[in-house]
Image 1: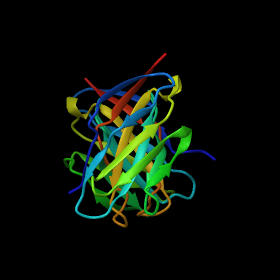
Image 2 (image 1 turned 45 degrees about the horizontal axis):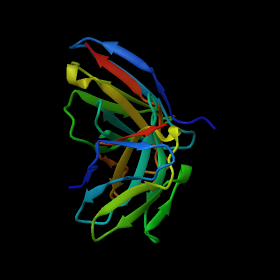
Image 3 (image 1 turned 120 degrees about the vertical axis):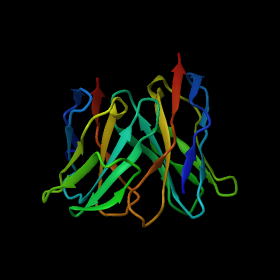
Length: 114
Length: 113
């Protein structure tokens, strides 16, 4: 079975500071990895995804993530955050070619402090 | 192009009632998936429908059912509502049965009193 762990439920950070949101996954087979963002009272928006190839993935809004197979991690980073980055962030995995059943973590609430 | 749309936006029901939630996928998308997001948790997979057939089911009781119509829109039905069914219900659509890209709708907020 697949599972996703987001170690930090809440992350406060000052504006223009760097941030890292941590994600670890558990799976006996290869997976695709995703980061989604959810703004208040909205659905999920894809930030970035890792399917294969380069382990450093760049996404929208200046976010990037690095896939580390040995540590089964897919941490999300941004070098300088803005107030508008305040939102809930979800890490997710799916098994390739087995349908669209996403497994989500419990989320990390990022609060950017002015 | 219109994204995934869901209706209604908000819904209030009482315990024991039944509810129907609706989802219209992006034009051309043949797969619709449903997720339940309880406050403070990540979304949990409920169903996937592709070409009007159920292609995946999560760990939810039989009170939850769904269907997909010839135009690929979908309905999620929940019978005998419990307080614990209060959640944001998300619909996601994609071109194919198995893909790395899903588009999520804004969700329907269900409150059970």
